[in-house]
Length: 256
Image: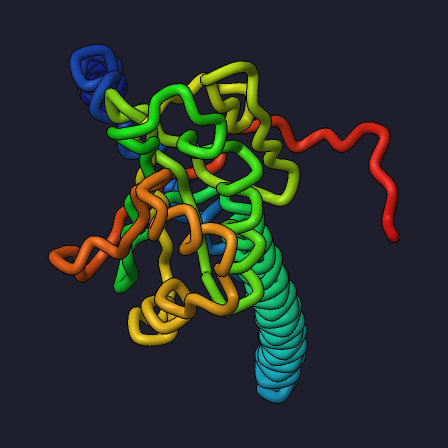
């Protein structure tokens, strides 16, 4: 009986211990199971059999990157070549455009579409102040036409005619100089005397041409008779001529 009582007491104490420490025991069991599973999983991980596998992969990646870099360099080189080609085309266009601009400016200057200034002379032409009833004592449009043609022939670079009141007209390739009674029309602009003919060009040559009494005999004969006033204005050394503002359209023209 005493032995049986002792076993019962041990059993009761064991049950009491298990009940009181159930959480602790379960925690220990969980830890043990975790360690067992971890060892099991680690034992199944594959190992790298050959160390050359990683090297080959890196080598392939390096080769691929090298190829991509070479391709990018070629694209950059091709792009640079295209840019150089386009720049050359732009420079050529600019050169061609400048040539066209220079040609246009030259043509404008030739027909008088730009104002000019420089060395030259001014020629004074006026009616007589003595014989007002004499038709030869008037500065006619024909006198100015002859003078203009004569000055062109002697190398004038540009010519204009200024009438009383500062009305001035540039002589161009289509200029007409006509007369209506005592009024002169230059580029269809009415002018009255006195007239100033401005000439751009070699001063010495222009002065020599104007002073040639044999070449301008008709005018100088009238000057000697007191029927016309005509001379070079000595005080003028340079001239300023406006641009041509007349009509450039030619109608009913005929070349002889």
